[in-house]
Length: 425
Image 1: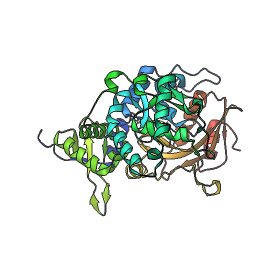
Image 2: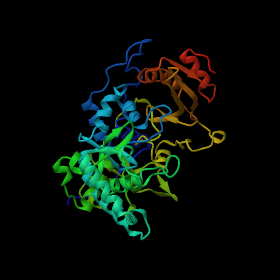
Image 3: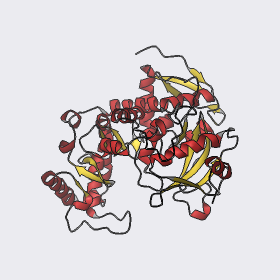
Image 4: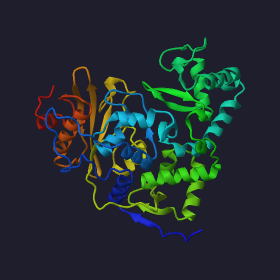
């Protein structure tokens, strides 16, 4: 055991810069003055290499997957926000090719993680197995023959998506989430680690036996539950920079009690440093928080970035509000007449503040990036549209879209259209 480290104190701006630095968002290629404006019709820049993309995923720990594709699939966006334009095919090879350096599992939601992190999830797999098999009338306990048949089928035929498995029970029971018995079985086996992701094909998960995909050292790695949880909490703290127990628990969707136990050990080991953050209170009492011992507070933040709703910086809405004073809710599931900011509203990061929201849609058939709405937060700095407009031009170029249209909706819409040199519609 090391000597306890003295409690640290952070101002709220320092905490924001620390969090941005930990998330590789203190500066970006889109920062003011860093990247030249793309020439009209110019080819996209070569962008980040496979090594840089892998390194960034490893740094933030995971990239969440989501099926919504109105602007761009979510997992492409965190890397674009941090690295600028890159070839999405490179990320596809990293994330969706079985047997590579990264693999999919339920780490936050469905997410891509370094393959070395897969054994850290074994305790979760075993808990899910026990839970799923505990109900006498639950699907998993009632269908052992289907589970065995699926394992045999994939052992004999190799990795397969659900759509390519031939079985009378492979029929949807309803629209969208009306899974067939085959899909139910595959998902249970995937939750338990009896099957793993062998990649994705047209965004459909491919299921494989562990030995068909994982390196032997990963497949047979046995990490005690408490140690795995400590390592996950340490990863979360490193990725967040500073946070509360609930912040760290949310990163890998851990139980509060497990997280608190891990924090105690990590604090004793000097990995986590008790920290007071200005304004972080509950019932007029300071919230207990910790920073990772390797965390560094950048002197300044200069980023300009649009963030996915599922970006690790903002996916914990309570932390986002506590850190940035930014109340954010995704409105995908809100009926259109009740939406305030739009179907797929992206937070706009400028320097160390979330200063606006931009609802984007990629109309690939027309070759147009549509700005469905653009809103400024109260107190957004002067020059917000001057930072946003070139970012949107580069974003359209990255998406292979030749034009930008701005809908006359939102407090930034008119000024943004003017800066882009287009008429709002």
